[in-house]
Image (cartoon, rainbow, N blue to C red; front, side):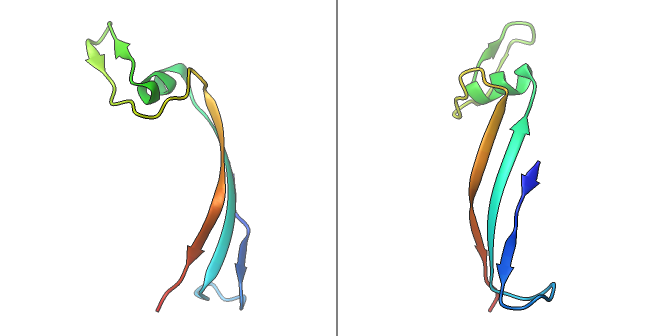
Length: 71
């Protein structure tokens, strides 16, 4: 689920620049968590790419700011 309120100088759909604040809550299963950690799967004889350790967690909360400008 993501919430992303947006600030602009005008109310039109195509109005730029925009400043967007976002918060995302995501939840996934254990298989996805293993893939993010780079775990070896003995059943399928494969290893995931890994590189993003979540220590077995199956949820996360991300937040940030995005700016969009057209010229």
